[in-house]
Length: 396
Ligand code: FAD
Ligand code: DHB
Image (cartoon, rainbow, N blue to C red):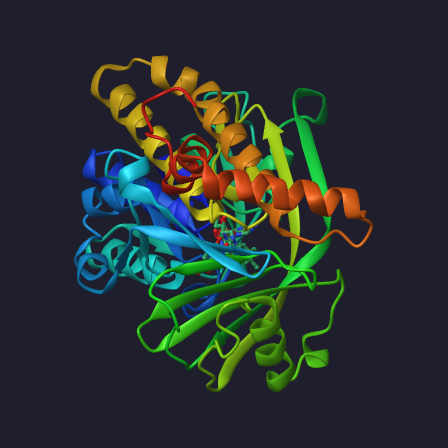
């Protein structure tokens, strides 16, 4: 089998890229290791930037997002027992974000890809990507018990942090910059209406908490926990009590989240990682395969979408007139934005979490920085502009 662009991985990056390529008349094949139900159920991100929403619309996947997505014009920061709202439109020339779960984005893109006759194979476990420094790279994969090969003009590794595509770049030709954090998130999904119409990011002596949502009836909630924490050590009542304690307001002692059945619980480790360059020969890396961020600030999915957008434009140019100019610029174009998001995610994470080794001095610095954001439109604008996403076409 041969295709123009072989895509390893059917997460948001791979699926969006396939749809944008289809729109540009470039054929592709997506190979996804897991089955459809697994990919559609995997609970992950929930916030979409304007550029991601625009790309989903352009890919033809905007209908349900426009009907069910919840636009948000701000977030609330809670620290020192007080609440401060950051207003996005006034600080960012009218930009906002949408609450629309990654599970739904993936469902919409898969349905479209299959309805449109686009090639997407589930249960296709890629073993290796070979010959990326030749003009006929090959993807070797296992499907329905048989070894198969797909030859391509180009290969894109969209196979996430634990994928295999990155390994096709010789070790001497790539560098990975990494940082781990001394805490994790316990993420839960609850059948309980969100108590507030916007997201709440809370700093407290007991650790970080985040109140998000999936719909008017379902809350998505996160608590900072120690690395290696066992979700079984967090019965539902303990989770609700801890959320209430971390989100407490000095002037509203009766403030409580609305409780309901918790339907999912999982612990997520936090890591920052960037592999450079994002292209080697005829292999491109996109999304988590190239970079990950800690989730504070909701950049992971949006960065994956941005890579797919930049790459789809580059392939469209190449297909139209043979120019590789944009393909050659891909890595540098994306990395500028990636490092900005890495910095933002790192800053949000380290300002809002309680490092078990931190001193009273460190805590005072965090509170001082949060107060600066609350008091200064300049500091608030810096947060808001990064949160809603920097425009794709401007340098970071
Ligand atoms: P992925 O979504 O990881 O997709 C990669 C795909 O490749 C997967 O479907 C995988 O099955 C497939 N694959 C892997 N190896 C192979 C192979 N050998 N052959 C074929 N297919 C393969 N971001 C936020 O903003 N907020 C959050 O709350 C949040 N929570 C997260 C929780 C978890 C547990 C994780 C892992 C990430 C979370 N993220 C979150 C980050 C966000 O979900 C990711 O940045 C986003 O999924 C990246 O999309 P992607 O397509 O690059 O990678
Ligand atoms: C969500 C996740 C995030 O990491 C974040 O910063 C905001 C919201 C969410 O899953 O809803």
